[in-house]
Image 1: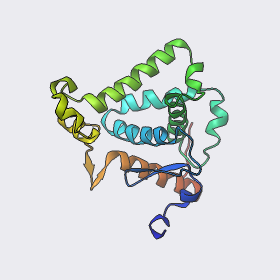
Image 2: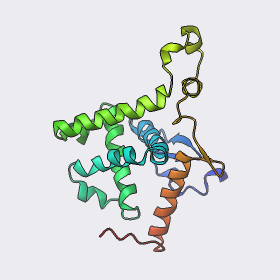
Image 3: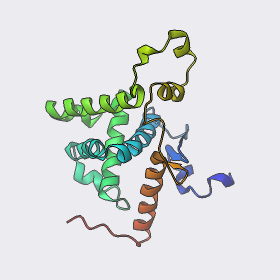
Image 4: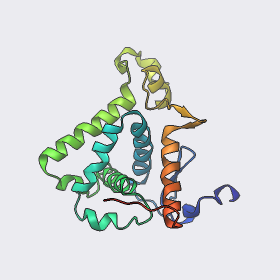
Length: 191
């Protein structure tokens, strides 16, 4: 298992993203783990392409129950990264049909969140063109990646930055910041 030596949580994490791929530890993962990790990748792309949408989504975490206590569970993350983690946890639980703080939000906040999730998924799937423009027999033989390329979706056609797609780069940066905070080499001042 040499390939996993640089990932300390490989034996304890229920799921993680490595080099743009989602890995699930089936011994530990709950049903929401794949959705959780996929949401991290989608948010990573959104953060580069539409920062306003990204921050409007992850800041919804501030409305979840016990937010301040929960943010304390991530002492080695920046506040924004911890908010993303809390947001992704609740979205994963919600989309997997589990109990989630999303249903505890005021109705207006739920509508805004639903709208933004639909906007995110629409951007991923629809791109510039409609799926309806594709013949049914073609559609059945396409992978999701092929489909999004055909409809010119920019989310699933990641922009390359020094050979890395932006979703992977976002996760790498978040992981590096976490490591630096844990090692005492980076401090966040949230005043």
